[in-house]
Image (cartoon, rainbow, N blue to C red; front, side, top):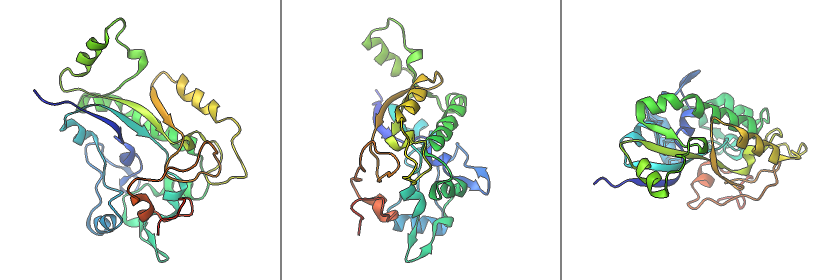
Length: 245
């Protein structure tokens, strides 16, 4: 019998969403997002933050059948300091959507807007994920009626399907203030949370208030120190406290 795997935190399409294969061309969901040539060398030097944690093709070949995939907008700390050392900017060797990076770096967008763009990217590709990879996003509106807990467990383990529920990674995603501009604080972030909860095309299991960097325009909590410090190595920024040296 094949062992089925549960993963409590991974990103199914995040790097596909923030990457472009060529200028203005979205990255193909059939491919894994990988850095190449000098980009791979730099990526490995900085701890490997840009290669895919996961992708639909990887999931389809794995025993992962149930998991929590996180939606998050890129934080200013990352957008502002991607592969920058000694005054040298090496970021453009990466296959990133730099229009999104520049919007975030220069306060021309909000985290809530970028969150919704990424969420819509997942929703837009739901049929493709089902038809090509047997990947389903769970929704309480699709509950199995009067089925017992055991019936539901057996249903989820049936066949080669992969079932994922969404989570919100960081309270900054609820911010409607321009990124990194603390003079325009949002008053009621719970309104954005209610908008998300009221959607019938997706469902979320959880929200963690803190992520890897300090968000001056969204005081829902402090920053959360990464376990291995790779983020601080690749993105040295005053938005990390303490700064990794």
